[in-house]
Amino acid sequence: VLFRSRGWTRAAERETPREKPAEIFRDKPRTQPKPEPAPVQGGLWLYGIHAVRAALKNPRRHIRRAVFTERAKAELGKAAARVNPEIVPTETVTRLLPHGAVHQGAAILCEPLPQLDLEAVLKTAPPGRRLVAVLDQVTDPHNEGAILRSAVAFGFAAVIVQDRHAPPESGALAKAASGALDEIPRVAVVNIARALEELGRLGRCRFRLCLRFGHCRLGFKRSGWCCRRPL
Image (cartoon, rainbow, N blue to C red):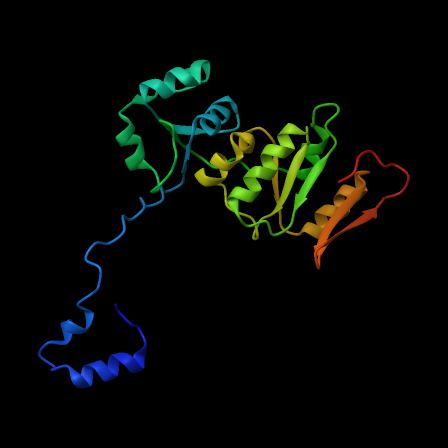
């Protein structure tokens, strides 16, 4: 066992001859954990059948490289026709991705999605899609991924996140979202309060859920009489 306490180390050094200081660290593990691949300059890897299929169908997603197994290409179907993929064994895909990534034989190297303007997103939303979710300091990619999936399922128009207190766009986020990252506009804003004011100016009702001391409190704010759907 290696103790890192400074006092213990000094005491051990007094009792151990100076010519054999390495004996203090005799029990240091000899095997080091496998390092993750270095991030790709100017791009990111997305992986998993659902995430890759949604990215291939998204015209806003610029794809630089596609690496599939034979089985993954067949499962992706017509979506795979957009790219000229490299057909490789499963082990090759695994080596390209972070340790432990569940890729299902499909991975693409792509650019992050371009930034979106909130007002433009709401104006171009399909008819009937008026709901917007605003996330404040949801920093775990798995939690945000679950929210993105739910937002797509319930027909939300967009999801708003704070640019400094939200997980960056990544393979883990796309995988957790099961393709929803490329299916719903994700708008990053500098200030959540200003985004809420802008939503009010655009005629949106705003609901707030606040969990304190084990109780869920609901706050409601309406801007004028032009109230379409709750936020």
